[in-house]
Length: 482
Image (tube, rainbow, N blue to C red; front, side):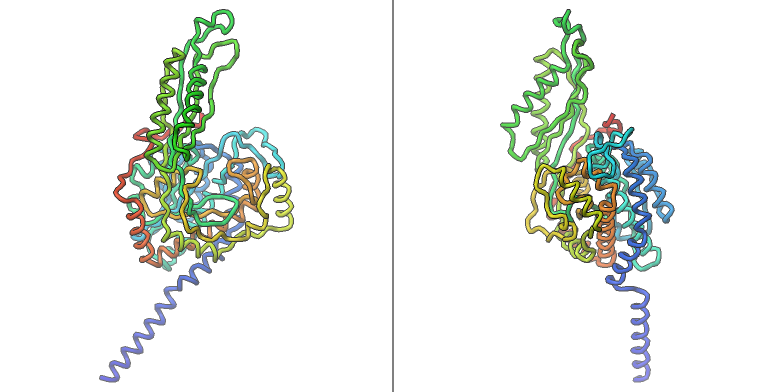
């Protein structure tokens, strides 16, 4: 009997040792992941710079999405193209079973921000758009993280499913909203995202809910000097609406943001314009306020049409929710960001950064701040921007970070941001994001209690709210940039 017990103990010890050999520790998985992603630096830089040069705007990202899809497919992912009625959207999947971890990727550029990779304002001839929000880096880093997790699943070091969601038209087109509405996140356990910025931090800032719409006025054309009484100016309708909207600013909650551009206002001063269009955004930290303020904005448009004897119609273009922050996931990602570390510049990059900062109209932070990691915020604030990641955060526990892809002080949606995105400064920050997302995904695959805790917090944060898209039941506005 003693020999039998001893033999069993020996066998148990052998199996334990063998199990440890087969199943590496989470720490070693992370170290290997960091080295693996770093070894592909040049390949990922090349992909990001290609998308930077394409600079394709929302729903027009044909070459950008194709490059990312081909990269994922060549690495063993199965690709679903054109999901949620968006030709440039995709889902790339690898693995099977639970957990299902989603990594979000973006790749649309902004109109009117053409710029080369220099420290002086120099538009690229023949190109009207630019990656002023760094989505070429966003998409590439997410693909890099997804490929790393795929390799771990393939080698049986972890089990489950990894998905890379190719999300078009974040800049006003609300691409992710259609994905959420189509139920494409219904079986996802956690979603991971990131965003280019001028610092390294975990996203503890919510987003402003928003609704955007184009208001179109139709009038009667006439000679503006010989027979103005026969005309009805559509531009007058737009300007009357704008005047009333600007007066309304005094009587809305102070956190509200209302902004607009006149996209069409006529072609010649001596022709009464019979068509004009204005594009509006309404934002507020609370989605219910956005809905009520937008209703008031529609009233200004109706009043303007009555007063100018023109006709008005409007089309909702986009709408996104605020961002639910999941502190459980944020704390885990913070540890991984600290492990990865910030961005170290070379002497040439410091020189570039100093020159770029001379173009700012404000005092910029220290260039060396790119090397540091900002501590996790104690309090969640509302933030000033909007993102369709907000809708994802109402479907599934979501966590994100920012990485220093721009010189300290660089504002988003600027030519300076475009310039940084075409340099090693942008690439280095992108790699910080890729590694941090991959390490966080490893935690999720190896620690089921982390997912369980994040879901518990998600349910508490969401409360009894039943998700309803702020853009209604409209189809994707595929031509909103036309």
